[in-house]
Amino acid sequence: MNIEEAKLILSESSQEHVLAFWEKLSADEQVKLLVQIEDLDFKSIARMRNMLKAGDVAGASGGSEPVPPQVIELAGKERAAAYAVGEDQLRAGKVGILVVAGGQGSRLGYDGPKGAYSIGPVSGASLFYFHSRKILGLSQKYGVRIPFYIMTSDVNDSATRKHFEENGFFGLNPEDVLFFTQGMWPALDSDGRIMMDQPGHIFMSPDGHGGTLSALDKSGSLADMEKRGIETIFFFQVDNPLIEIADPAFIGAHAAQQADLSIKLCAKREPLEGLGVVVERDGRFEMVEYTELTDEQAHRRSDDGELYFKYGSVAIHLFSYDFLKAEALCDMPLHVARKKIPACDADGNVVTPSENNGCKFEKFIFDVLPDAKRVVNMAFERAEEFSPVKNAEGKDSPATCRQDLQLKWLRWLHELGVEMPLDESGLPVIPIEIDPAYALNAAELKEKGISLRGCGRPYSAH
Ligand code: UTP
Image (cartoon, rainbow, N blue to C red; front, side, top):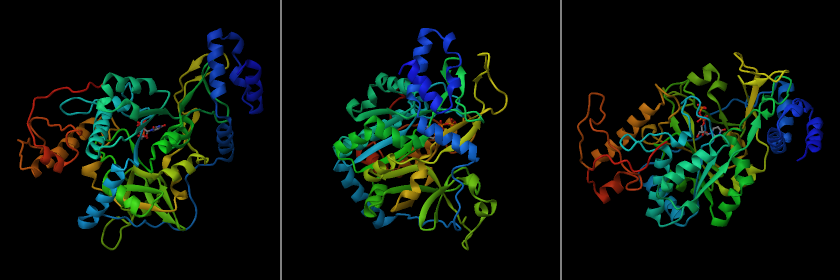
């Protein structure tokens, strides 16, 4: 793109101010700014402006009173049957894995990709280590190549790739680890103008985990899935090392219903826990954010004393390939968040504001839910599958996550009749860790046996 083309496209969308300092920029800065302008998604920017003008907020759904969906809880023979179907799908190479890891991890305050954060209680290995070793374990168990699609963003793409390279891809075949970056969007001020954080630079941030769909398409990852014959995609978030990646029972339940989308749900810790709630309304499914439930809805109880909207979603999903592909071509709703954004004033000085001065826009993955015709909602035990690293301290922090990992492995050891000395809070006195590529569950650990070793450091974390 040259300067004349840039002027034209900016004037067509009333964003001429982006070139206000053009004459003062160095040649290098001018080239970089032109590249940024060329990459802008003007169609989405027009939607953002209209949304600001209309004072619109995505997600506030109308319609009739929502009701909880039917949630399956698999146990005994039913679970075993679903598990066997899921194992067949895995063995046939029809399952791919997709992790979203493009976020900025601002609450954790870690200077690097969140996936490179050190979480192993003994090894100090990273979140990516645990995910990759699980996929390696599955791949070895079922004798099949399992593609691992990793969504990064411009903010962390090169550091993420480097983390995998430095760690030998944690034993995975590099050809089966496929990175792709999500889109980046500018922020707008209250007049709908693109915000500049330097005289020659547009402020950009990731377009949200809902950006996965268009990024899958644009990057060629969807085409890769098709080439490999992938029919089902297991989707999860990078910050939860307890995840049961590609749980065969979940895959089996999804396959039995020929579902477009399946969702794992866990019982909420308290009525106002910050998890989305799946509801059924007018024959369609929706995810209602906890902030959108009324106080009465959040606290309502059924006759059995349980919360009426008992289950929350933690973004563990299965997508059918066809549904994912169809959704990748749709415009998703936009969600707006008011933020403090460093901005360039009329004289070209960069000001860091003390109040919110701009709007960031994001797409959320769960907005595809109303388009799904067949949906499976399946309950899971939180202690077995979910303990995210969100905050630096307190709830959902590295400390609570390391504890939950160890408690899970302790339960496996207990099943094998191995008892470890525990401290007063029930945690092992000597930290424990099990390599997922060695055993994915207690049954595999039993089969392979245990020999206690000292604490090696198999893979480094940043
Ligand atoms: P969170 O909403 O928890 O965001 O993302 P975060 O970036 O990890 O942390 P905070 O909110 O800044 O503290 C949930 C999952 O969605 C991914 C994250 O990487 C994480 O796996 N995500 C989020 C993206 O991939 N892209 C985004 O734009 C946002």
